[in-house]
Image 1 (cartoon, each protein chain N blue to C red):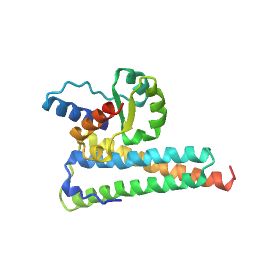
Image 2: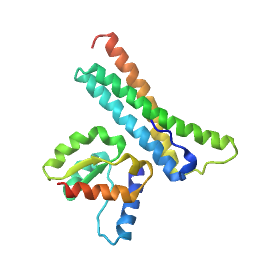
Image 3: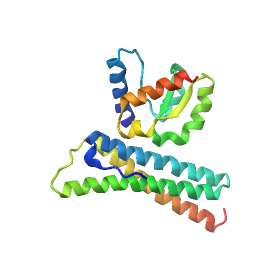
Length: 110
Length: 92
């Protein structure tokens, strides 16, 4: 996935990038469970892998933000940024949980 | 919430080119109810898994449902999202 440099973005666009990648991942995670339910185990795995790519892109942006702040350049807080963080964190939890669930289903041959 | 911000930008763009358009954002629950009043439906990337379900509903109103273009969304680009909405109406 193409790496985004946050120095080229406005604060608002940074939040939107976080929401975009978390959002893509969220959709893939739900589709993964649905694929598994329909018996498409390989597709389920591929969708989780796709979600992980998007989450890694979001994580990379997040990492740049933290680096920027530790370099003395404070990030301006806004409700939009908090909303973006919320998207990212909830999707990360969702991914971990669904990955474990798929693993459990496979082990139990469901 | 992010989607409603994009809507504000789409409205601003439409106004800037003198076009009259009604653009609004609703939550997942209200989408099916509200789409009957719409000419096209755009959904955020976090809802793209609902696309086929929403399209099925939209078929009865003969309108199209599409996920907002990734570049338009990621850059909070109201112009691009507005143009995408128009393209959905043209290809009906």
